Amino acid sequence: MLGKLASLWLMGSAAAAPARALQTMTIEEYEPRSGLVVPAHPVTRARYPFIDVHSHQNGLMSREQLDRLVADMDAINLRVMVNLSGGTGERLARTVRNMKGNYPDRFVIFANLSFDGIDDPDYGRKAAAQLEADVKNGAQGLKIFKNLGLSVRDGAGRRIPVDDPRFDPVWAKAGELGIPVLIHTADPHQFWQPMDRYNERWLELKEVPSRKRDPAVDPPWEQLMREQWNIIGKHPRTKFISAHLSWLGGDLARLGRLLDSLPNMYVEIGAVLAELGRQPGFARQWFIRYQDRVLFGKDAWNPAEYHVYFRTLETADEYFDYYRKRHALWKLYGLDLPDQVLRKLYYENALRIIPGIDPTPFREAGR
Image (cartoon, rainbow, N blue to C red; front, side):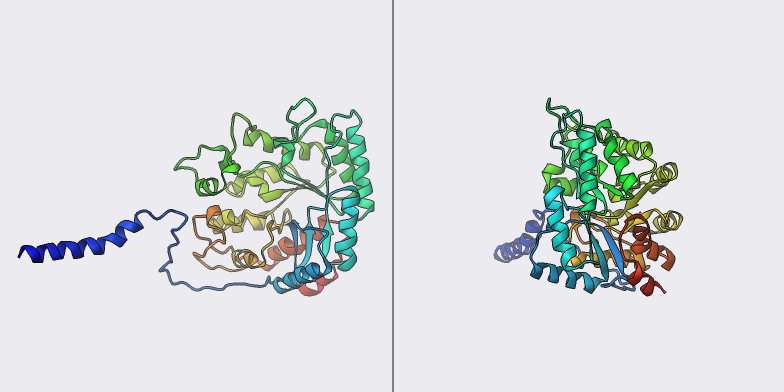
């Protein structure tokens, strides 16, 4: 009898071993498969040809690499890609010659701002003159990276705010030239919050610790964003595209009020799709109301990830996965946007804001 009990105990212990091992599984390893069965309509090609206003490419890639990139663009119906990493000066000129020289109608190049000589009293005038030269060399816009406001320092080591008056000649020159300024300021506000169990970006901060912002070093999120919005308000004749929905994808009501107060401000949806897909009802209403102010953007280049964008924007599907778990531990739902709104998001607004894009392929497809 005792032998039988011992045998049963050993069998039970052996059966429990896998369960105990699973208790050591990390959140990164946890990939539950949903048992929910609902209609699914994956979309691998956009309904309309579109303009991606937020991409980063090596503008000096080989012709073979360019051919492959354009083939990948064709597969998803991406008609025009805006390369925000154009550089300035000779680097910008070479990028334009390479990308637009080989494919004149498929790429748009934005210039970037150099902070060399920032302490020169004449910096603003020189930077504005360089922007004008870059536009003459083929740039169709200006991209400002998030280092402005966070890490750019003057000669004395002081942080230079986004709305520093030294840049006013540059913003004014962009308006004079009729080109938009796509500006990325700060990061998701959760990066400034305590990294605790209440922070919904906890997994991202765990996987990429460098994204955590130190309040002892970095200025507050609200201050940074207000610096950006200050320059938009100060330069009403210049069109600004605030990147990543101005980091207000999780508070669309506030973003709407901001757009109401700043008529020269536009936004794009790069890297914030997960915010929209978890609030499909309100996000759909918001897109319809602000349909003239939003552009399509993706950010990191991965053709397969665009499929999730198309499905979220074009269908009414329920409970499907985002493509990167650390950005969204939740499921997405489709917004099922009206065709009129989709056309504006995919290409009409960009055609209106960015000069020099041939509208013919879009108008033919939209009929």
